[in-house]
Image (cartoon, rainbow, N blue to C red; front, side):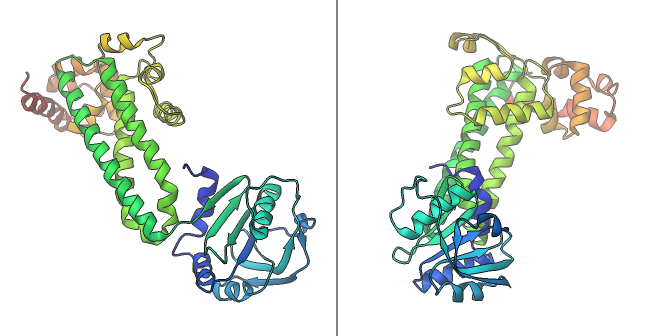
Amino acid sequence: MMVASELIPKIKMVAPGTLLRRALDDIVMAEFGALFVFLDDTQAQEEILQGGFYIGSSFSPEKLYELAKMDGAIILDESVTRILAANVQLAPDSSLPTDETGMRHRAAERTARQTGKFVLTISRRRKVITLYYRDHKHQLHDINHLITRIYQTIGTVERYKGNLDKKASRIQRDEFLDQVQLVQVTELIRDGVAIMNLLAEIDPYVIETGTEGRLPAMRLNSVREEVDAMLQLFIKDYGVPKYTDAEVAGVIDALGRREPADSIRIANHLGWRAVTETDLHDIAVTPRGYRLLKQVAKIPLATAENVIDRFENLTNLGLADKDALMTVEGIGEKRAKSIVEGIQLMRDRGGYR
């Protein structure tokens, strides 16, 4: 199940390694039930907050643990730097919908809905920490279960990434033969978007592991950066209009908001309008050369733009000699040589000249 993006900052607040999570874990271990409301202005919520007593003390895990021994809600500020009140009774609007059955959890969900603030509960019987924020709800998971799930996802993502790399290599081979079909490009972008969506789906669970999840987070971020860079370059290479970086980011974002990112919709975002499934297989496309310049010469994007403006596409770029390349602003003898030699090396590897 997808976790609402609005909940992610709240999940970070209670991730392992934070002082708040240390207090929550101690409370769970002690088998206390607890309810916490995070807000800066208690007076603005006077109709909901009843009774209790003012504390106004700086936050510490030890203080929170001791206060959790009492009944009622504990009020903390939203930056979790101060404990404002304790033993507070919550009286939210009883007409607000809730699927909860226990009194503490019903009050928590309704308070989050009514105030739009972050509310957190600990179940005494089930030893479960539940987050409520606006209309969203999320239960924290056992860390060992999360780590297992994350590593399973890493295996899946890295396998998908391997297949994506193979597709990119096949397209690169066909580029030098001038035989790339639009369907090859749309299918690669579709698969790349699917990987990015999978990474977005697992992100909240990685965040939930806090300091325990640093290593898997690094592996997932490495895949994310590589796939995002690939998608950007393919869109810049094959977009009918010459997209800016901001426009490319907009295309990736738009494709990632809906699933599946089918090939027709991807073709539309690339600027191919009113195409059919048959058209995807019939239309031959030529890249501009951004990916090649990135791979063989590692030149800055601004310089690559100058090269593309001069030669327009990979076909023309592949015919250019060192002297022609050196007429481009930002391309000196060294860069020109690396481009020519890089193109030749790719041709030799592919067995075509």
